[in-house]
Amino acid sequence: MTTRAESSRPVSEVLGVPPAAHKVRDRSFVLLLGALTSVALIVLAVLLIDTAIDGVPQLSLSFLTSFPSAFPAKAGIESAITGTLWLMGVVTFVIVPLGVASALYLEEFADNSRWWNRIIEVNIQNLAAVPSIVYGILGLAYIVRGPLSLGRTVLAGGLTLALVVLPVVIITGREALRAVPPSIKEGALALGATRWQAIWRQILPASIPGIATGVILSISRAIGETAPLILVGAATFVAFNPTGLDSPFTALPLQIFSWISQPNDEFRMLAAAAIIVLLVLLVLLNAVAIRLRNRYQQRW
Amino acid sequence: MQKRLMIAVVAGALAVGVTACGSSDSSSSTSSVSGAVAIDGSSTVFPFAQAAAEGFQAENPDVKITVGESGTGGGFEKFCAGEIDIADASRPIDDADEVPVCKKNNVEYAQIEVANDGVAIVTNPSLKMACLTTDQLNQLWKKGSTVSNYSELGDGTPAGDVSLYGPGTDSGTFDFFTEEINGEKGDTRTDYQPSEDDNVLVQGVEGDSTALGYFGFSYYETNADKLNLVGVDGGDGCIKPSVETIQNGSYKPLSRTLYMYVNTASLADKPQLKAFMNYAVDNADESATTAQIVPLTAEQLTTAKDALAKAEGS
Image (tube, rainbow over all chains, first blue to last red; front, side, top):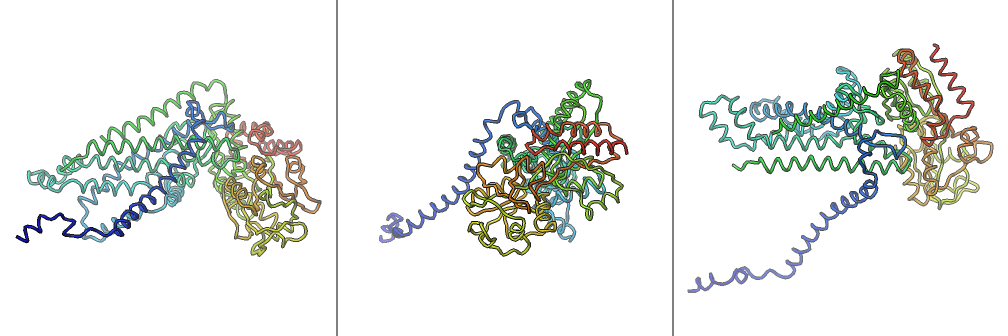
């Protein structure tokens, strides 16, 4: 009888009502977390609004289709946009095959009990955290000068940026491969597929959305990198579009950097406008990445 | 999916490249010279070089000029390695560090003056400082200086906690100021706020009621309403920098000449470089006005033209 009566009592009676002090502490903790989050968001909002106030009035079609100029009213970012597109083309071309191949090797073939494979793995993790300016020094010494001696060209700039983001592509690529359930591969192998067939026909196609997301996010990091390009020695006044891989170039972040350091206020307004263009490009890229992920993500 | 995206990106980039190529071909009829000219160096000279390049390209659309701004030192490094045609410089080439590199790489060059510049000493408007002698500046800025209140500098200087702003070590302005005021390039007290971006220095001085700083004259000119300009007494009384006092050299010792160093071998080989240099010197006045820096005097212009003619002849 007593047990039955007890079991029908409401939970709060059994466990006791939490004291009011607990509730207050609970609330205040949530409030504190909310306040801390909003600090970051407010800073971001202030930055965006400040940039928008300066930059939006400068945005026009002629701003997008003019070359840089000593006269703020005539200056534009056409060569910076085309330079950035060229650079991103080179970066994509380099990081996709290299990144996917490395991820495949490390995930599917590398024997983790061998010391060299462990060293490669640790180093790739570390490389992802190396500041981009260090890659700029590397690019200057080995790509612009030294063994490759490409000069200050689109190809040299693109290769340097590719180095900056390659470790991230490899890491995200591995994660995408790992997300494919082992049963898929095992099933393929059990049906008589070779290892290569299992990877090429089953694992790789299933992991493409993940890999693509990683690549796009890497490109959106590369698109905003300034330090490596400054170190490589890219010019900031380039009043023509790149004509090929061996052509000199400038890029959006370089143009912004150059304008911000001018004494004339009007150039800083132009920099704000160029920042908006860069932000729009970034948001577009990230939107594509999110769409890819949502659309092709498979639930196993 | 990824493949298609990649193709789209590359195709986009190529399409842009091809259209750019097409448009430059179609306009080739107006000019006789073509080819590339690579310029790099001082960010103080950059606006001048940019204005000259822009004006020249309007007449010669087939010449592809690139102008970088990696600083006077960075420019000379590339110049002496033979990587660029013209080095923009806010000081003469360094005999000890840079000339030997040029010699080693067989880079011969000519020094052409293109404009003038002054280093302005400024304070926050609430620190009413009218004038400093070069000795006082030296006391304030020398290596290991312990001056902590401006009143320690002696007669007439207002009281206020010392708070200093100046350019960072990569800047030609830094080299110039430390050499002129402290006797040796790079010698300076280190407890000051450095920035490679002069706009940051302007903002720093503007927001700090006892701040004193130095930077390029053009940065003072565009922010004159927010700053107090300090005159400098180099022995002949107190002179404030202005276009006149910088041009006639009476703003001593902080006025200087800005240069372009041109590779003479390239000058002989590349008609487009020769055409550009002549344009730059002939239109130096106009480019300086556009760039908002102090133009050459008539006398300096003659010197520049002679130097260029001599370089072309050699």
